[in-house]
Length: 500
Image (tube, rainbow, N blue to C red; front, side):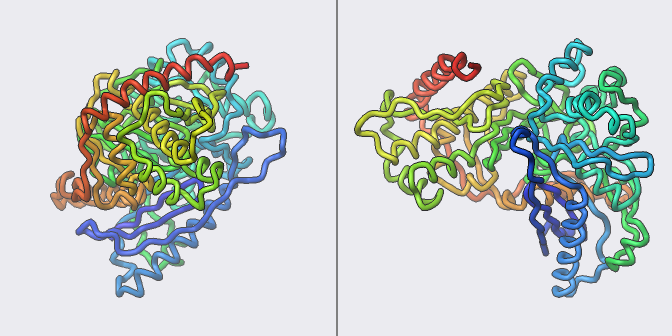
């Protein structure tokens, strides 16, 4: 049995996985952002103490659920960790948290991004990425300028899941996939880059030790093992949430890809080498397994746009919006039908523009809310398709894409996305378990490697059974190509307005 712990932004989830790859129990606890002053509109912070409370409560509930099923605690063999990426958790020499953690969706450090690229002109070649406020390094440069006395006390910088690891094992450690999102990692060499660290006033001494995702980084502290009724089981390095999610749906081999339709939208493609296209805001990171990498395009608002439009146009919920859009039908969209730009929170791929805004365009006197519902689904699809194209430009292309996330449950939207992208989309079992499943699988791989039980990667990380497949309709794809050209032109025409 293996525990997978996923520290998300809105909640912490723990699952129990057996050696037959079955999720036997799960438990979760909610999390919330700290309230910020009105002038700090771009700030997003959480208190790490809240993470630990949620972790203890979720693990206790998980073990209780396991006990009720007759599963003995001493049957649990290892723990794997995953969680929100990029967060800056800063500790002093005694291991005490110095301030609330600055999260992945915090936008305060935009000026520091430009300064870091000025200080290290080769930053994009080293990391494979543009400097963005979401990443960790600009946050630390911001702290050095705006909270300088606190900055001088920093002894360690940990990512969110790695702070949980410290609580579990007393070890300072991280994995390659999560570390790649800090902008301190040489992604091709899979090692900290001293020039980038120096540019933020830090050194290797401030960083955790680096491991591959399946490697054991330490063992559960004796007092926790006793409290939870566990042995002092190993804890493996784990992965950032997107890489762990990919492991959970079997995206571990080059050429495999997935499209995640959550609050944000992510296209993830595994590859066997270091590829990059930072100019189009493609994220180039290490994967959770040795000698593998992955590329990502990221939309900041995907399924969130559906919630926005449902509320704006008076639908009872997103399900009602989807039903109305389906009745309206996607097969006869006119070239001059309304368009929707899905940039409710700015955008990453391919624009890297925090000033981009959401827009409905092309409404007429006869426009209905069903037309706007359809435009919303289409606009998110166009944005996702642009991201897929950006990843393709790196020479990494997948003809079949696994579709996961809450938005994937709509067959109508899934077919529209296939028609827009021109790719075959496939839904598989297990896509709703999320990154916690990948973390538990990495724990199993680590134990297998350590014990020599001989289980192969394909046995531990199988591609789940197909639930549904959506092949593109070539006639509708041609219609969407023309519509997408207009979508792209609309963004370009509004760019000066966004900047103003």
